[in-house]
Image 1 (cartoon, helix red, strand yellow):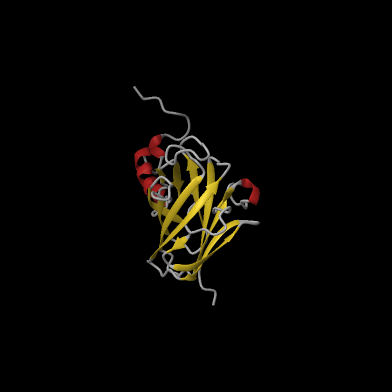
Image 2 (image 1 turned 90 degrees about the vertical axis):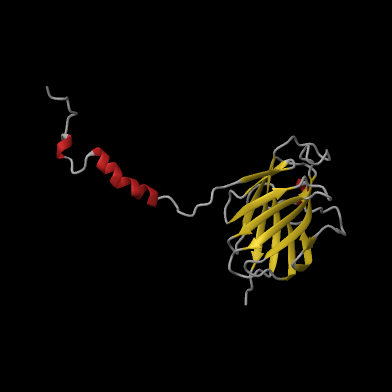
Length: 212
């Protein structure tokens, strides 16, 4: 008795059997996947999470709760000399001026350790805050690099001697008069305050290379 076959060409007329065809296509599917794609990793510490999901760099560590004695420490590796964006999300309830670590209180002492893996020297480094991605953080949104403090003593870098803050039309913190060579690291300390805390905000990090 013959087995029923679907209409059309019988299997014996195919150049490959289904199993052979799959074995021929399978290597091509692997070729279509980027060989060096790094998975996005979200690091949680204190009352926040930190993500490199927007690309151009990777987070290698996170610790701390965001106080002056126990700052949020984010370790990064930048693979480019163009701006990259760090995504920050509250992971615990929002309570302005509440206990650091237990709630997202809008006061974040930060330390960012950055490895220069871009193959180019950096002669300046700028941070910019954004409540809405790709839109400036305006004066009235409450998010800033501690703009109420006119003489801050908590802004520092291991590689740059000076800094400049701007609050309009952007919230920016520029470190200058220094250098970070390729495969070397730099540390940046600063305070972020947000008097109307949001669940998500962003820090754009812009390494500057020599122009001459």
